[in-house]
Length: 70
Image (cartoon, rainbow, N blue to C red; front, side, top):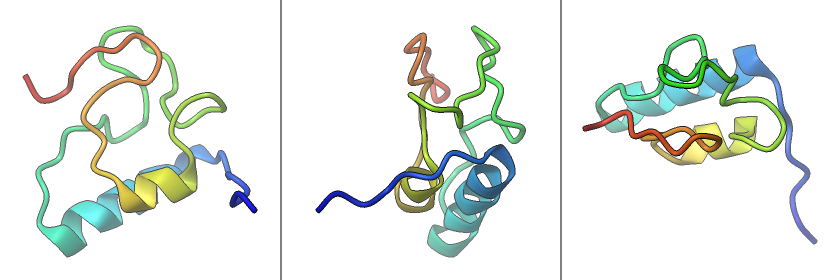
């Protein structure tokens, strides 16, 4: 059974920041969740969930495809 996804901007931002700290990863994703290019909220439905942000380093926008690490 697929895990239910949670979409919450504050929780997802916190989850990504925690991952950066725990894994000593660079900070690519916008700290407020707003894409630098298209200004959409990357942690909204259709984008990164809280669960995804806690497990994967976010390097680009799920909506416009802009890379945050180039």
